[in-house]
Length: 212
Image 1 (cartoon, rainbow, N blue to C red):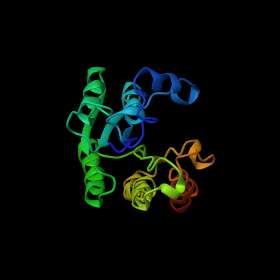
Image 2 (spheres, one colour):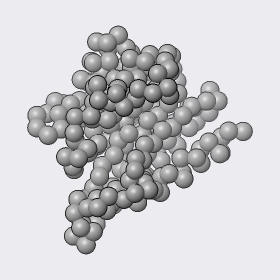
Image 3 (cartoon, rainbow, N blue to C red):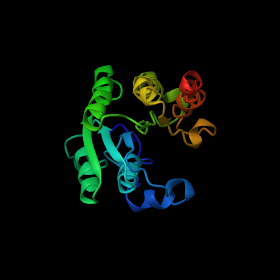
């Protein structure tokens, strides 16, 4: 997964019960029976927590991330492990390896989802990175470009690939969490806010274009 690969801040143990606790409100207690939901960055952290929780609510979950082999250390976890947990709890899930920065992987993710479940109802653009940590003037600008690629261009590309599948059924949702970083930049994380803020107004564009 691309999630939090550069920072211990988002590498905290956010999956399992902690995520479920955060989701315990009226908006998240409805079932998702029959819905096909793609969650990127779902090998660990918030993405894994969302995927397993949605699976327990009845969704058919497509777990997408780069990590398919187990690792020890700061960021363990694979999409196959996430799928295993969903299935063990009685849910439906498949794992599809996807680097959201690679166009062929994006195409394969959407095609694989439709092949496995017949449609695609919801995309959760969870995968992302925080980029360089430290003072702005000491940042590596190559890392800034990487942040924009992963946090802005890749979700837009993936969302645009999903829209035609959703339009065929005349319904669908694309969810791209931006967090507080979109409006309240954090000190020493200068590259995090700009792509999030840029993405915020774009999220309404597909709806405005396809709602008729």
